[in-house]
Length: 70
Image (cartoon, rainbow, N blue to C red; front, side, top):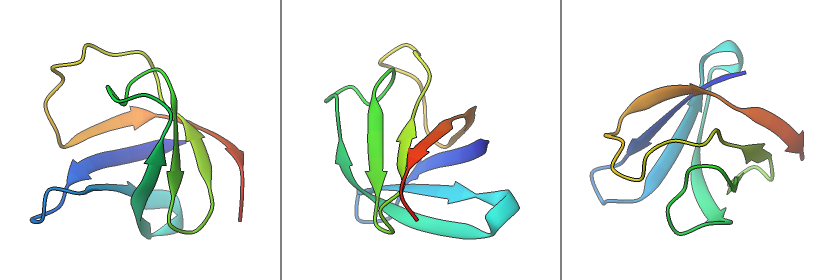
């Protein structure tokens, strides 16, 4: 699914899923570098993010896989 990852005005990460019109904060991430690991959203969804360069600029839309939750 397409997911837009961005930083909020407070510096926290947020994920927006256009098809579900859902925006949730990222509450946990598997890797400090974000890319190539999983993230957990505020609603309990766990998403697998693709491998990307650590310096990838945000906001960015990526193809993520939903592993569990909600």
